[in-house]
Image 1 (cartoon, rainbow, N blue to C red):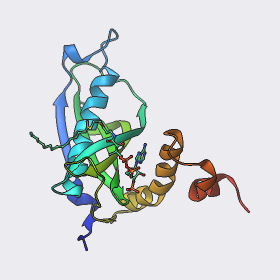
Image 2 (image 1 turned 135 degrees about the horizontal axis):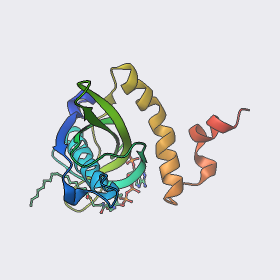
Image 3 (image 1 turned 45 degrees about the vertical axis):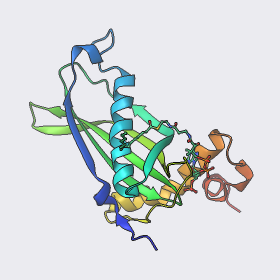
Image 4 (image 1 turned 90 degrees about the vertical axis):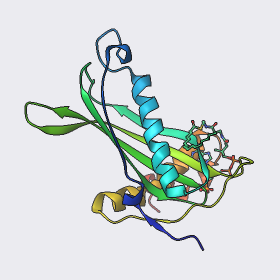
Length: 173
Ligand SMILES: CCCCCCCCCCCCCCCC(=O)SCCNC(=O)CCNC(=O)[C@H](O)C(C)(C)COP(=O)(O)OP(=O)(O)OC[C@H]1O[C@@H](n2cnc3c(N)ncnc32)[C@H](O)[C@@H]1OP(=O)(O)O
């Protein structure tokens, strides 16, 4: 049996400066640059949880661009696995921009990614269970199955009729 791991064991943090070649014509960080950084850091978290296996991005489930990030900003990305299923793992990435006037980080974006651990033949392999500890980790863990079902439906991999946990949000018997 594979030993379970806590969510915090997969924590990965990356801080960077937004340079001019990473911005759009409004002088704000280009969305694709942010997506690439989010994919990169979340793959590190998935790999930390999955162990020696390779991990591949199976889906980008959600990315909200709530606030533009201006050129010159100090951007911090934090990612953690929120739940492990059989071979797949959900990873949350929270993005913050440093406010130098008030010496605090403000959250600007959140992204939710799914990674799958695979062997050298690209066959999915089992990953350790995840143990959530903090209130936020437990909240994200509990809702992850519904997000997985939604992601599978959108990818054409699941019949909505089989998504019982997701349906229970909308339909009460
Ligand atoms: C030489 C030097 C080397 C150095 C080395 C070090 C590297 C160290 C860092 C590594 C970091 C790399 C990070 C790269 C990250 C990319 O950039 S990877 C490139 C982009 N991604 C890809 O190319 C993946 C392409 N897709 C695939 O290969 C296959 O579809 C997959 C994802 C492996 C799934 O395979 P499958 O045969 O369809 O498997 P299936 O059994 O149906 O599903 C497996 C699991 O995935 C889940 N799943 C599948 N699709 C979805 C979906 N859309 N939504 C949610 N869940 C899904 C299933 O529900 C299932 O979950 P579990 O119940 O097992 O938990």
